[in-house]
Amino acid sequence: MSALLKMHRVRSLFSPALARSISDVAKYPRITTHYTLNPREKDERWTEVDMERCVEEVDLVIVGGGPAGMSAAIRAKQLAAEKDQEIRVCVVEKAAEVGGHILSGAVIDPISLNELIPDWQEQGAPLNTPVTKDTFSFLTGSGRISIPVFKGWPMDNHGNYVVRLGHLVKWLGDQAEALGVEIYPGCAASEVLFHEDGSVKGIATNDVGIAKSGAPKDTFARGMELHAKTTIFAEGCRGHLTKQIMQKFGLNEGSEPQAYGIGLKEVWEIAPEKHQPGLVEHTIGWPLDRFTYGGSFLYHLNEPTPTIAVGFVVGLNYKNPWLSPFQEFQRFKTHPKVRHVFEGATRIAYGARAINEGGFQSLPQKLSFPGGCLVGCSAGFLNVPRIKGSHYAMKSGMLAAESAFEAINADAQSTAGVEPTGYAEKIKDSFVWKDLYSVRNVHPSFHNPLGLYGGLVLSGFSIFMGGREPWTLKHGPQDHESLKPASSCPPIVYPKPDGKISFDLLSSVALTGTNHEGDQPAHLTLKDDRIPVDHNLALYEGPEQRFCPAGVYEYVPNEEGGNMKLQINAQNCIHCKTCDIKDPKQNINWVVPEGGGGPAYNGM
Image (cartoon, rainbow, N blue to C red; front, side, top):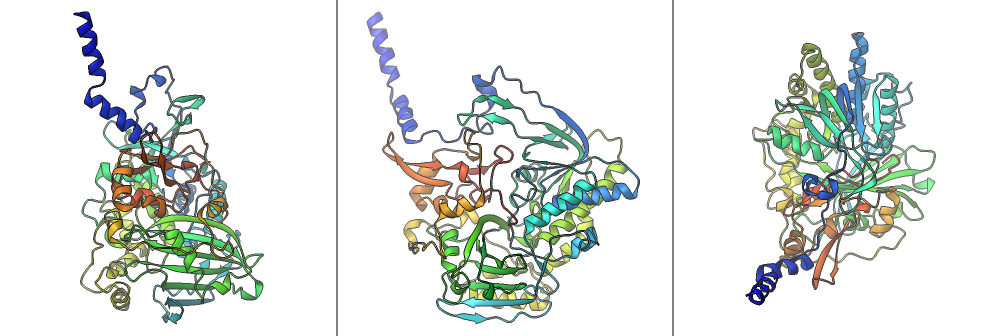
């Protein structure tokens, strides 16, 4: 009897179900170890770890130290000073230094800065390059066709300034600190905290000292909690806490899904005789086909050395999975009407960032919620035809601060999160709402059977009408739904980089100054470790290898499973959020790494 029982046990160990699971482990090795998908409560390695967090009570917490967040902080302190009140304002910023994760073109409209800090010139704001000339062109394979820029139209930059936005944000941070704002760089907000009634209570910063395996290290330290009467979310485009807030409170129910682009940028030092400070150039057309939305910018800065900023934007609703936005950017610089600028020049910086392109249709139906509100690119305030959002970010931050200040004073004894209920109306009464409504049909007008050509006609009509046309166009499918199977699309063969004008990806990433603590769980988390191989690779030939502008994703041989596997090089991540947006199955969820990690941009 015992021999039979032993045989039964041996057979059960090698049952078909178990054999399949062993095979699956080899074929689909574990990738995601992050605690957001592997609860610590079920992990015995965490049973003896003290998980208590330090708590700080403040009046206003601002998540993100960009133009919106810093403007909100400054305005809140200005209002408190006017009323002779004390208000504690804290800004948490995931970059190691204020401005270190900021990337934008950028040509800035000073309208909001004029209101926030009227004497900004005397205070030394780094707006040193007024726009002197605008050009707009359509590129063919070998030529350049000029398109007129009419006064008052979106591409007219009269009165604006070419800036290095990271430097401006750093300056705003200095102004905020001078007013008494507490700024915590290197602290990533990783969790939204809630009161028992469901209102937002504040945020928690991320834990540190967790090994790549997901186990606590000897250096483990719990993050801290910041409890606030009101929390302003200013995370920028595709903020990972903003995503949660939108879902919990249904903020974008009834809105068009957000549309996105990826913006890639380089900074160059060029020959002095080619330098024209204040020159602003934009192009559309080549190298993109007529059904792929995008274009270039090239701005001449007034710096101690002859410096330009050049960039390329690709709409993330592109269809061909073989397309690489990074490679399209490199190819653009080789155009015969463009390359002369870069001959004999030196590239000194590179970076990339996703941008909102949905405009008016994609704004949340509700901008505030119990305990907080959304500002800047967290809400989607970007004017696509003007390629501008910084002045909207600043204005929305200022209006949010005003509304929060009013609400906190009106409900001073509240033990729950205070909602800045007046914020939405303030936005609707501002130039932000008017501007975005007037250009609402420009971007979606490119979704037509003629592509770029039809889009130029339709968007030109909309601009001419000033947005008074009695219709509002839709954006169509979401960006992650747009890819066609690789087998149905022509592969794109990109030329090899010459190392002078065009470059490879890894040497470009080296210019970003990106650094992450190596022994930590990858912050590019996968909801299902099988999907990359079974779906993305099988159907689209692994598009994440091409849409990522930092070489984070690559497929490598899986010796144990006899197939290919996805390898995530999280240390390369430049926090652009493109993967979170474009992944076909929405399987990738970007969460914050340890604070201070990521790029170290110098005025990008």
